Length: 327
Image 1 (tube, rainbow, N blue to C red):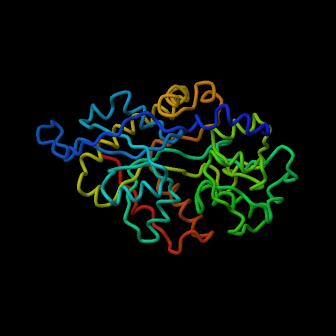
Image 2 (image 1 turned 30 degrees about the horizontal axis):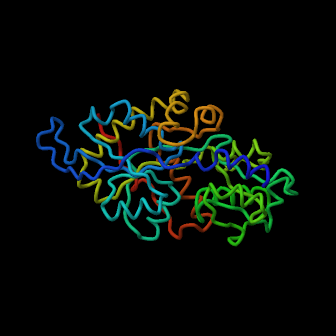
Image 3 (image 1 turned 45 degrees about the vertical axis):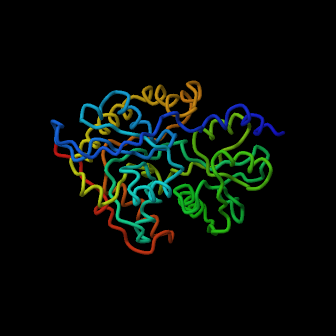
């Protein structure tokens, strides 16, 4: 068993274990007795046990939703595609979702979506391409015709890898990219199934300790500070429950401001809804926590997707942003 695999055996499975938060079955929609007149007092919210979701956990723990008359029931989802289907089917009201995935779904006509809040953005060291310690790959240019593992095909990890390769003078081909779940990437790298991986934390830290090398930060140059994920819903849900959605925005906004100012809050929160331990939380590279939805920032994502052939049509992201409540 190689060094990377031995390291993973100690902690990699536990790192991204599902949260212990229970998912309630309530479907409370009446709030006629509520002082703030919400159309719906219980919101089922899709979440993923990764750093992106930290503000939601903080808002729950600190009672920000409760103060707005809301009960938020978090439900762990496998990813954006599952969340999208659950939103369209009505079993979720809001979910965390990567902008690339949601923009793809919108472009393909799967549904009409609204982002209600930003959640996570790129920052140095949080999204990288890695290789084995003894790999002959030294630079991005060496990735020509090499296989690269990404968690989901046509994801932000693949898009930013393609951008970095183009900057290095290399044209990426679609058959270079192999879909691997993040927990499976280190073993795939060690046993030669792939030549490189597009990694995220906490795997970056774990693999680095086991001897893996970073050859490029994916979020540099054209992708610097790129928006990664936010909280979205369907156009229909936003129209049906405007007061409830506004209450969610206000409560989450308070938490977002807290984590944006104080990394320690994120470090203390991660072990509570993921299996990332306190020691790992203290050293991993975190992305940013933007405090507002920026049309110009999100448009960068859509424009890159169009440039690299991910979407066929020009996408006006302004139509997909639900403005924050006036108060």
